[in-house]
Image (cartoon, rainbow, N blue to C red; front, side):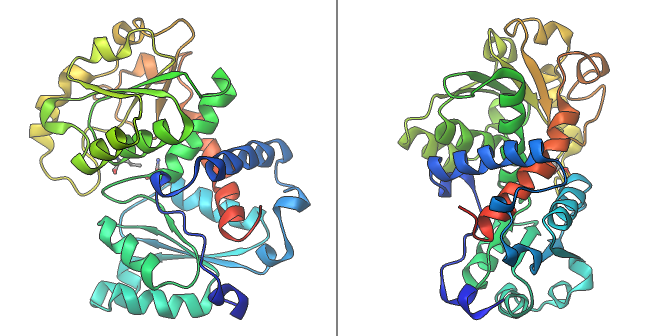
Amino acid sequence: ATKSQTTRQPRHFLDLDALEPKTLRTIIDMAHAMKRAGKRTPAKFKPDEIAESTLAMIFEKPSTRTRVSFDVAMRQLGGQTLSLNNSDLQLGRGESIADTARVLSRYVDAIMIRANSHETLLDLAEYATVPVINGLTDKSHPCQVMADIMTFEEHMGPIKGRSVAWVGDGNNVAVSWMHAAVRFGFELRIATPDALRPEEAAVDWGKREKGAISYTSDAAKAVRGVDCVVTDTWVSMGQTDAARRKKMLEPYAVDAKLMSKAADGAIFMHCLPAYRGKEVTADVIDGPQSVVFDEAENRLHAQKAILAWCLGVS
Ligand code: CP
Ligand code: NVA
């Protein structure tokens, strides 16, 4: 990192609740513009520094979309990437996150991490002097939901005032949807088994922020009349109680009958990887209401906008 980058506060992208609505809107608008421009990023979103920048990507868990979309995003912006698995780093042998953050900050211009524990992300951000990006933790997945908001708007128009139902496990992606509901001003109905409601900290935050977020164990009730139905895997990376979860989550499978309760023209979203015949039936995810591959593509465009913002654009 250059001296000027170490003397100012880095622009971290840690969670949607930590960012202003105006900033998030700027990033989404930039993502739409990035997509329109294709591989030729508009000059105003691509200052010279980006072309000289390197992004380090640390993976403590597997990834297809996050890994490839960040890598390609950085290349299309003219920068470089390093893909580092936990076990390749001394981190895997017990070197502290603080020292890893201090050292990497001397080499690279931004760090993206997919971490087992959210604490690891926060420690990295505390000690890094370059921007840190959350590429998924056990608690949240903000980059995914930025791509999801972008996808919703492409198909349905502005998301402000619209309605989304989250059906299934109250997991990390659900928490980022809750943050987004408040920051972008839409209604979010969460249908989960009582034991799998989203974490209390996020529920309390939503209440404090007076978000239009409701909770039920009745999937059909949550879906009635919504513009978008979202689900995710029943067993997230790092979870070990697969049999227990499957039993609890079976009534929450998204099938054609459930989708028929949503508004006419409603869309279906899933961050992928998906497990057909579990959280969603094949006819829904491969059917006309599904926008899951647009979501996957939009990870690339949203990531370019997030990187441009972190590295100083706007
Ligand atoms: N949706 C998502 O983050 O996918 P990967 O786990 O493949 O990165
Ligand atoms: N909830 C899932 C999302 C994968 C992109 C997980 O954490 O495994």
